[in-house]
Image (cartoon, rainbow over all chains, first blue to last red; front, side, top):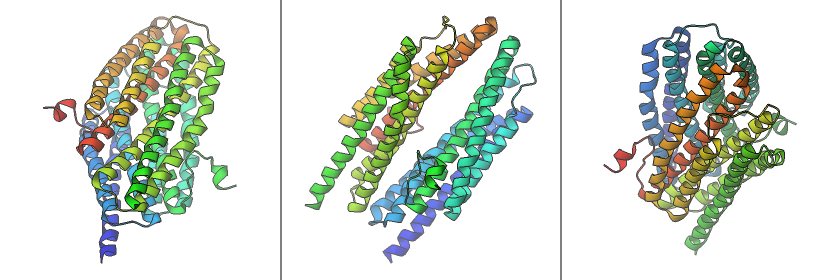
Length: 224
Length: 224
């Protein structure tokens, strides 16, 4: 009887985390669209979603604590709860990154529109795909899928390195465009950090499912 | 008898986290000194400490899991363990930031030395003070002290905003110094993020001690 109640609470915890994930995904998607369209309303929507995401983080932590207090969970349940606690933090910080992007877009709206040598929408698409895949892996408890997220991260990092060089050169050659270039640079880094958080989530999924900790290991350590 | 063993394990968990904190504090301090002296060996030391910090993170998580499996902890012990799990993540990410600073200093070594309008050593001192104070609050279970960290964070953010403007202007006026200015800009942001992590730790201490969650609240919410 107690066991059934415990299982229901685990399901509720998972469901709650997925609601939070949905809010964060929407914020990322809107922030990216706001960059493309320079839409002020979208920026406001992203910034307004932050308090709700923050509240959700606290609720999920409380739920996890309640679960831990309920009975002595089995090892795999403990790993699941630890994974949720970690993922919860990563999701909340992704929300912060999305809000930071929105704030930069509001800055950009005040500047002249110039051609920047960085494909922010593509970078955002990649980062969003990482988030989607990491969450899908979490939903299905699929460690293989989680590992594919780690490969996408290399692409995001590479794109970011290129953007950094290209924007640095632009600043040198056209210093009058420095404000725009700096804003784009920071948005690119925001997106890179969203990718990093997705990677963290993927690693937490692998830890939960396999019981093996892959954090801080390269892919070749996992699949020799 | 079991209770005594549990208490010992809690103490061990705390001790382990403080060892990790010491490694991270050293990395931050060395990264800052490396910036001032452009010392290559210091940069290498910081970068080499990262794997050890990462291993420590995994050990601490495992210890926390073992504790949660041991018996049904009381509410305050649960909050303590949750705080440790959170602080553990923040410490590890601070280590990443220190390593990132060291990498930037290695870049700077290849560039001409120029006068930059940002006092990185002072910013580093402030960030390190936040970390020290947050950890002291953790050691002593002192929520008042933890709250003082939140005030320091405003100073760090303000210094960073100033640095951002000053470096942006430098880039516009002396584009040939853009590479140095961009590196300093990123180091300033690395330090700001270290301050953010210290803030997170302080909030976790308050949550553990008071049972009240102050994350995402302003100081005036806590002390009306």
